[in-house]
Every structure is written in C-alpha cells, then in structure tokens.
Image 1 (tube, rainbow, N blue to C red):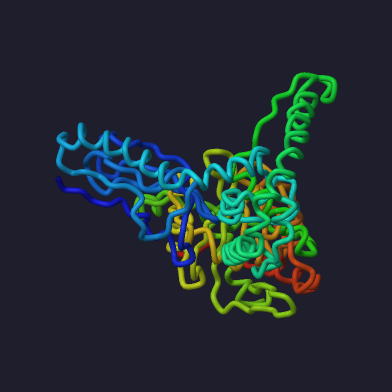
Image 2: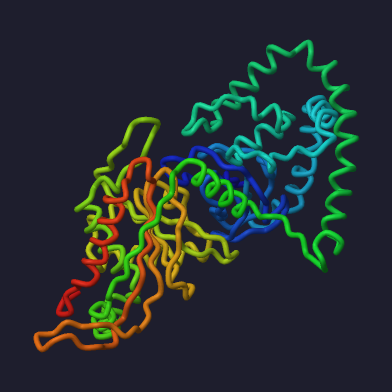
Length: 445
C-alpha cells in the first residue's frame, strides 16, 4: 500500500508553525489532488492546506487545536485507490484509542484545572493565537498570563516567553500543583453561572431597549480589534488633509484603460496610480518610511506598500507589495490586482501580509470622501484616499480666472507624532497631491 504524508507547507520566511483549526476531511474519506483538507491559522492569516494527491486519508496525525511545525506531517494518504478504505478506517479508529491510553493522565489533570472556561478576551494586552493556545493547554488563567514578562515588541509575550514560563512553572510548582488545584476549582464554579446569567440579562430588551442579536467575534475580527487598540495605545495619532485635483488622471485613465486591459489582461484602477505617487513622495521624504523600536528609529531603505483589502467576511486585511519602488505602473497594477483577488479568496500567504513600511487605504471605494485611518504598526504613517467627485472650481488661465468642473478628492494622512512632526506629515501629503495633480496626460504605459 503506497502512502504519502501531508506536510504542513512553508507559508513564508517568518512563519514556522500553525494551529490546526478545522479538518475538512476525516480518516477514511476519499480526497482528490489539490482538494482542501484542513484549515490552519497563523498569527498573520488563515489558510487551507490542499491534498498532494488523489487517495484515501488513512490517519490524521495532528488534531484540531494542536500546533504543527512547518515541514511536519499532519496526515497520511493512501494512494492505492479503493483498497485502503476498509483497512484505513479501523486504523484511524484504533489510533486514537492508543493515544487515549497513553496520555489519559494528562487530560484528567487538565480537565480538573479547567472546569471554568479560560478566556483572554478581557485583557488589554495583545496575545497571539499561538500564545493563547499554549496557555489554554497548560490551564493558565488570564490573571496568571498577565504576569508573564514579554520579550517581544512593546513587551509582547512570545512563544519563547510562554514556553519558558511553563517550564519554570512546572519545575517550581511540582509539589504544589496538586494541592493548588482543588482550591482553584470552587471559585470558577461560583463565577461560571454568573456569566451566562449576565449574558441572558444583556440579551433581553430590558437592557437594550428592544430585540437584539448577540454575535461572537470571529478570529480575524478579534485579531483586527487587538491590532487597532494596540496601535492607538502605541502611537500618537495626528491626521492632515489635502484636497487634490485629479482631473488629468481621470481623463488619462478613461482614454487608455480599454487598450491597457486588452493588452495586459488587467484592469487599470486608480489605486496603482495613487500608490505610484506615494512611492515618489516617500523617496522625497524618506523619514516617513521608518519604524520605531524603543528610542531607536529604524529607517527603511526599501519601500513595501501595504494596501487595505476587503475579505469575503467583511473584515479587512493588508497585503503588501514588496519592493514596490522597483516596479513601474504596469507592475504595480498587476501586483494590486493579484493581491486583491487572492485576498477575496483567502489565498494569501502569511509573508504577503507582513513587512509593510507604509500603508494606503482606499476609503473612496466605499463612497467615503475622507477618513482618519489608524496606523498599521510598526509603521509610522498611513494614507486614506477618498472618493473622486466632480466639483466647481476656480481655474487660472492666461485670460483670467474661470469656473470649471474638476475631479477632486481628499487625501487623509495619519502619522505617529512621536517621530513624524506636523511639518513632515503635512509636506508629505501635499507632495503626494502635487504628483497627482501634475500627472502627464500624454503619458504612455
């Protein structure tokens, strides 16, 4: 019987492991090559692992909620057609039985220590899904987790920190662990009933004034919420606004977009043009392209542009165009379209949403004229581009001033006042507007 291993694939240079969130197939199921087998989650993005071959799943090696390393086998597939089906199911059933016998003492202890549900939602401190998963497996309550010292950026608890704490916790409290568990158990029993009671009261019309629907935030929304709160707590946000006349760009795009799509197979939107102007302005003001680590300013000599994109769930994600300053307008257009399309299908890799040095958010795509974007840490600035609208405007001519209809838009530039002063932040957004207003209507692409 030929068997192949399903390997957790490499998901980027900065990703070494992932949490198995949902198996889409079970032992004994027939699968086709490239069919999605399992959903996984990293600190950066959720994705799926496809089947490497046609066959039958004979064994699942990593269960839901467990962590797997990149390159580790997470399942085994038989490629001998239908013959493995009758034999693979009993194997899949017997394997868990052996595992239960082997590890039964450990779950028993965890079950006693975790009668009360462990939740870290009330913390103002950021914890990655990996750190939370390890903490939950070890029965570490929020109060205890808050005491763990973090060596990561802004004191963030890393995998190394939590594993080191667990190791020391185990060695220092080996004799105390057994007696400590019984006193802890009664307390959750008192608290646990109160939370559902409070939830039921909150769900009623008495507190809300009418019928309501209470929805649990999904994992991505929780990560976004934590990231946004962390940004506001970290950076001193200031926003400057400039109105730009983009009539030349509108007319030029209308003239060449049909031919461009026919030649390149790509639609030319306004976003790549905005990104090109931002790249030019960053080259003029390189101190916008920095990050802050403690008292040290890290000046980036490369330009990676993040672009906010909507997911099918309604959440936002920020894929990154790496080394965008090395691309021409056609290259930027292709990168924008590729990342946006794969964001809509949840096909982005973790490395493709990390490493940005400056971010742009097109709030105009939602019909908004302007916005006050929140900085995408650890960057120090972000720009929101509003919708393009026709407005009456004063036009200077050699015969005097006249009133004409122009296409205009607002640029909103939020920046971290700890390192970007108002002069720099204001001059930067003005320079972006200058590049947009000075666009060459005779440009060829």
